[in-house]
Length: 269
Length: 294
Image (tube, rainbow over all chains, first blue to last red):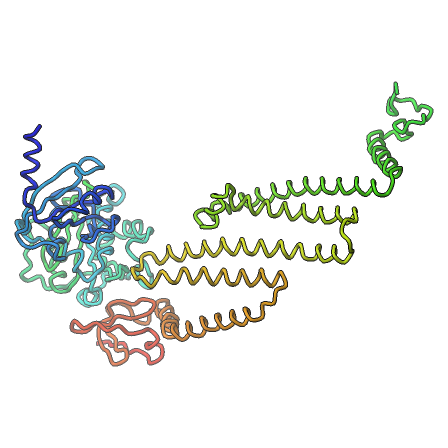
């Protein structure tokens, strides 16, 4: 089996750093003495790693997960553009089972990392909103598919760039995304037309909002509807990000700066 | 004794006690056992009589003590004390010594009952030289018991509070923060020691003064330090409940005009042209706010 060992040795030869995706404590300890810098990418820093990139979502797609980790590494200065990186991750089992090699900067900077970390809203809020959208996409409203639009962050400006379609059901309430009751509430309110507006700290400011940004020059793929157009436009006019659950194809898309940053299929989560 | 009193016929009274006249035989017989015992006791000389009573009292004390210990243990377990003290250093020490906190407390209560019985036994035996001495002991015993109890409970509560506060502050990544749980623990231990010592009648005047100074320091300095935060929080609760302005409104507070981005308990975030002001809520109440309506 020396050929196999050689193959693995070839894959990891001369890497500039090692990325461990959600490693166990013992695995991380084995790498403590290594000369190449080790970066841990995980939902939380359970192993007290020195270099750490927080993974806000457990991306099911390995490519997506690695992309997020590398972008985070570049952003935090753990990596240089063009560095060779060995990624150690788990795909099928509960333990680490795969090794890949990527060159940092090889793929286009998608901004997934920026979406979470460098947005106005807190990363946990964005994660909660994404989870709510995924949940809504999975179950729908009473078995029927629904669409929804969440605008997260920069709420003051978004409120001034929109108008109410009807009474705001969230007026004088202090509900935050991530509260257990919210899933049910949002599911019920998703019948309403218009957008949900969520503040930087996760407070649901309003539902039933009609967004009025100027849509000039917003370039989103053809075939997506008015909801996506509104999401793209409002994120270009303000510092908010938008999370859209498409009614037609059931995908969850996140917008920032007028562009689609992230596309998730709720069925995969 | 062929026929008993309830066999129907009333027999001629024999000289045996069991053959007594009463139809309620059981009561009679138990009474008579007591009588026999009393008679037997009466025939004994005074010294021996006292010895018998003393031995009985000690035996009763043992049984009662065991029952009390068992009861206390059951009650403590029923209240979940054994789970609550899990993980505290006191419990760990107790475990090392082959016992546990609950068992220790139960045994302590049992021991107290037994000690009371022992004192009475000693009194009947006249072992102790003076009457005053016994009085002193019987007055001192409960105090000692309470003092030991207070020390144990104080130790456990202090450990528990330290763990709890430490757990709460875990997310705060600041080395100095580890001082706070220790401070909480020491405060509780100090108060427990004070109570225990005053129970035992030791002069605690100086310690009491220290405690007063300490409490005053915490209240006074804490109040001084948190004055602004507290008044902001009070104002913030009012603002959150009544919502005189909400996110997206154009306001002017404390000469800062802009759009409200966020309202929380302590501060209001007002943004204008990319500059975000943090305005303490107490300013809103004290100086008022202006809502701009176009």
